[in-house]
Amino acid sequence: MTELRSILDEAVRQELISPEAGGRLLPFLTERGVAVIGGGVAEAQPAMEAEGQASWSDTETPRFVRGFHDVLITIGVVVALGGLWGLAALYAVLPAIIVLSEILVRRQRLALPAVSLTIALFCWTSLLMSHFFPPWTPSSSFGAGVTHFVAGFPILLGAYYARYRVPLSLALSIMSALAVVLTLLLRFVQWRSGNPVFFVDHPAVLAAVSFVCALVLFAMALYFDLSDRLRRTTRSDIAFWLHLGAAPALLYSTVSLLSFGEGGNIFVVGNMSSRAPVVVATVAALMLIGLVIDRRAFVTSGLLSLGVAIFGVFRQGSATVDSYIFTTLIVVGAIVLIIGTGWMPLRRLVLRALPPAIANRLPPG
Image 1 (cartoon, rainbow, N blue to C red):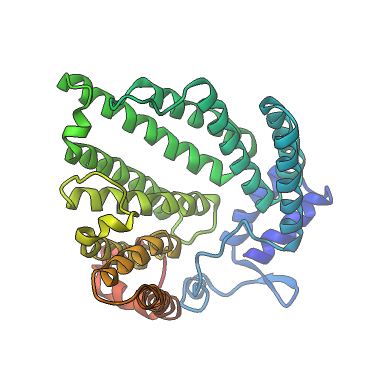
Image 2 (image 1 turned 90 degrees about the vertical axis):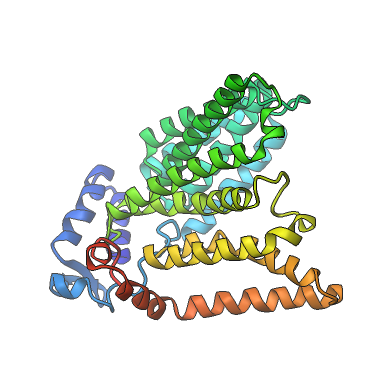
């Protein structure tokens, strides 16, 4: 499928077909069993075989990495925007992002430059909103500044997706929209309590509301994922980015909730003395979920937290600094290698343990 997509993209670049036609041809051809074999286009194997183990040994190939041509263009985009950002005013960056998006995304349909331009727009929006609505104030209360700051992201990123159809922009728009909902819920709870420092006095409530929003984000990722079970359309790409955001959100909110709403950052080693077992158990659960839904990205998002947790566990012992740092690296590296090399056999074991009604809705193992 990747080769077929590349052929259609090349046809679009040579203006043999329109970008809209190229986008419609890909699912049309793949649904009818057309594949690239030996450098030419041929009829693929029967549909039942196409869903077999060999055809689906890797269903999470990043679609935004298509070749070094995209990498080279992306380097140029990053360097040029970085230089413009340093020399010109903030408002001069947005026209440059739009012009580059028209050329590289809408006309040439380059995937990796589209991701870099979306990230540039996200950073530009962050600076713009922080200029007009500083989100952090000296007060301990949860004010309107945070809501106003977040509100600009779904609008601008949603408009960018409507124009250029970049999956990352829609994923960021969904995540920022949920962030707006979260801030509104927190402000409502604070207003109903009549206490301007309610969440300082009741951190468990903050952890519970954050956990609910993290579950909603994960549900949105699953919606896009399960609606494209064979991962042939851009819905799978949207799910990929949503899972990258859902995993750390679930981790942070779950650990905060299971730690009885204690304040502080779970990534601060000083807080790990009591939270390390909770973090390890939570990351293990996230890894199991990642195996079930066949999302390595979901697992990867929790690896940093797992490393910090294991670091905290060994730090409690009598080991020297060098020994517990290197021991942490060995343990995390071993876990990554075991999961990475045995992903498919482990996933087949997990799928066999699930009811057929659930397993049949998941990506093939």
